[in-house]
Structure formats: C-alpha cells, structure tokens
Length: 346
Image (cartoon, rainbow, N blue to C red; front, top):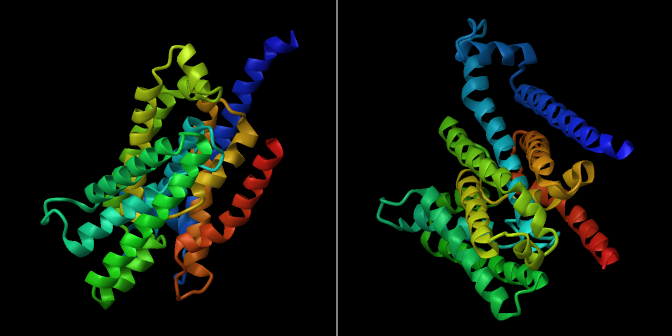
C-alpha cells in the first residue's frame, strides 16, 4: 500500500515545487524591478504592469512608468528567460550525453554562437540579409558539429565529448577575439567585449518576445520527449532497446537546444555555468524524471539569473558588472563540486 501512494506523493511534490517556483519567480521579478537608483515600490510595479495590460490606470508619472516598463521590466524578464533557457539546455545535454559536466558553455555552443553573432555585427556577414540571431544560430551549429566530429574521431565517449567541447570553446573564443581586435573600432570593441561577457543592458521587449517564443517551443519539444530523455539515462543501447530512434532523437534535441542557445546569446551574450549548475540543484529536488525535472529546472534558472543580474547592475553602481562574470564567480566553485561528486561516483 505505501508503494501505491508513491506516485501520488511524487505528483503532489512536483506540483508544490512548480507552484512554489512560479510564485517565487513572480515575486523575484517584482522585487528585482524595484532595485535601482530610482526609488520604486512593488505596488508601483503592479500599477504600471496593470496599466499596460489594460487592467487599470497607472498613478505613476511618465518617467517612473517608463523606468519600470521600458527599462527594468524587459531586462528582468529577459534575465528570467535566459536563466530558464540555459538551465533547460544544460539538463537536456547532460541527459543526452550522460555527462554531468555538459552544458552549452562547456560544449562550445555559446562560443560558436558568439562568433556567428560577432561576424554579423562587426564584419557585416550576410550583407545585411542575415540577422544577428541567424548568425548566432549558424555559429552554434558549426561549433556543435565540430564537437561531434572531434568526439567521434576520438572515440565518442562522453568524456571525449566534453574535451572536444572545451577545444571548440577555445577555438571559437579565439576567432571572436581575432575578429573584434582586427575589424572593430574602439567603440565596437568595448561594446562587443562587454556583450560577450554577458550583458542584459539595453534590451527591449522585442528581445523578450523572441527569446520567450524560442524557449516555449524548446520546452514543448523537450517535454514531449521526456520519456525518451529518461531512457537515455540508461545509455543509448538501452534507449534503442526501448524503441528510441537514438540518432534522430539526439539530433533533434541537440539542434533544438542549439537554436535556443543561439537566441539567448544573440540577445544577452555568453553567460556561462547556468546550464551546468542549476540542473544538478533541481535534480536533487525532483529526481531524474524529466517530466518533473525540466519545469523545475527552468524555474530555478529563471529565479537564479534574475537575482544575479540584479546583483550585477547594483553591486558597483553606477558601474555595471557583466552578468557572465558573476555567474562564473558563483559557478566555478559549483563546477569543482560537481567534479568531486563525479569522481566519488566513479
């Protein structure tokens, strides 16, 4: 009998985690918007949002309303979207590759996307017919194709995939630096280098809508393959024995996560370690079942990056710290902890 209650307990626990995470995210966004030089309260935030959604009249001055709606709200929401998206990408990559160290940054996907985006911005690749997002997506695919090729020639084991990713990350980072140093003027160099370290300054609602749409599609695709991702936990041979088309599924999910990574990088720059750390934290709460794990990971990543961005733009006010710098300071110790945990497991 106790075993018969286990599924119900799991569902209840998952529901509590999702609802609690959603409430925490809403409160975090509202609180983060109030942080800054201009004194704004949470009721001011609700008033501005309600007015713009047609649910009431704003009692705020045009300046305060503009600070909330045009400056802080899109930035905070994009931070949430980026955190959720990177965390989901890390979860899927770790499952497909059966490697706890896999994420878009470590596997070079973020670096490739950065190179593609910089090629469009600085070199004018595509003659104006190619968008920054398209350039980032092409760079992400090129980088990941190189990782797969290198790992295959080196034996195809999961540790080889990570080593190939590190090599690709270094290669595309060098290419990006070369393009910036040789083709960009001083102003472009300063702006691009800051963006490559991760920056959410100057984003607008168009960035929020574009990245949110790609995140929604990616989540739907990944949730639709939740059972397949569970099967990959036992290895690709076991997944194939369970009726999974291993190659087709792996290509579909990796290309989907590459598209999401490209969209996020093109809007916010290369932000590392979110996809590495958050899946492990969420997995400790939900277990390895991806139907519960993916939504909780997305919520955890969203809340995490909202507060990281808030810290980045206020800790040295009026100077802003790149978001990627803060995530690295937090992520490196967590990365070391994952390495030690992996070593003990083996």
